[in-house]
Image 1 (spheres, rainbow, N blue to C red):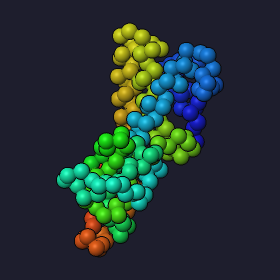
Image 2: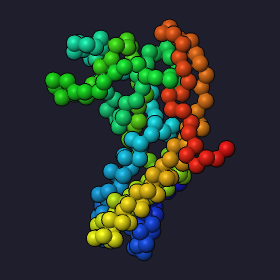
Image 3: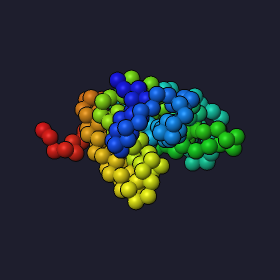
Length: 214
């Protein structure tokens, strides 16, 4: 799979830039390396937050905190490595559900990131900040490279040409992102199950196919 360096060089190639980057941490000294070092982590996290990717999804029993504020029954610590929390469930629910139980992510008076919910002994699913590029599927790599290219276009090309190229690259990133989401969704198949809380539905993210393929 592609490394961070290879993703950035793909991005430069999308822009028609013949330069190649050899190091991001620290940047090797070229303008391209400086720009890539600045934009790559932002682009990566944007792509990770765009979907509940299988390779970036974690499930954890939440650590309960003190008393919850008015309107909620329980207060839990938000996982430290969570980019996005997208599902809160009872612990006996083993399959994905059609809908998560109600919750909010806020911060308490001490500034700690917390999750408030009415679910006892809550389990949450969340998107983790994956930095290991060997975990990225090929279509995700392509979407990420185009997203990086859209952010590099302005600093490298500048002016109207840079703005037009940034728009084109963003559109390409979205197209590959849509296809990557569709492929990712096909990796899930869950059935209705019975839990102590009632009947639980199937996967929260219905498979989609933006390209109209069978």
